[in-house]
Length: 262
Image 1: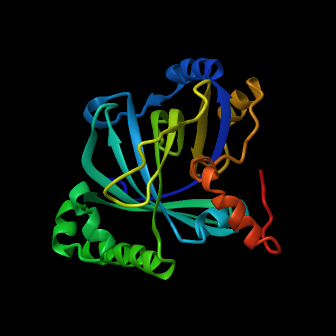
Image 2: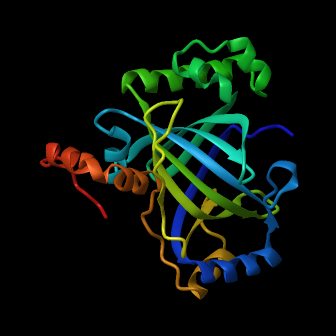
């Protein structure tokens, strides 16, 4: 199966109670197809390592609702016990309300080489279903972001995911729970302390190419769900760095130009 490396879609998040999520999942189980993950599993565990600059540019751009902003991460999938060797280097951009995600595959043992810009192109090409111009363009853009903003690891996010999609492939709905955060300031190690998100909440996200279909609009209205501005990354940064007053320091330093959104 060929890996999809480019995504364009509207993404909307809803923070809902676990019982409501259970009821919606039961309905979707009759309406849509379950997203199949590795080895045909109906669910997966996800670990994302996020990068940011010393002044937390990615975080601040998100909090300021900049029309053009980005996040960079390395993502792994797992089975709840182990995470697989395959990783995705991902660049998520938001441009005028539309979300774009581009990525390529690497092996976990290659991540140091990626960060140091010494990863072998031939090895990377063999591992991805991309032509040489596409992988070179992607690789160079990732490297430009890393170098221009001096990006480095800042946060590890983990959670459990279930997903549904329609037969046309233009609607996907995901349910994320068991969300946790860790301070992560290098590729090699992470903080031993884990910060858990409340386990009675589930993050539901709808991903559509254009407008929401009527059946999805009905479903959201049926449960009185209102779109919320929720970011796993920003929530993690505010949670993990709170003890060092890092976020307060950044906000105070940028007091004149920053508009802080809850």
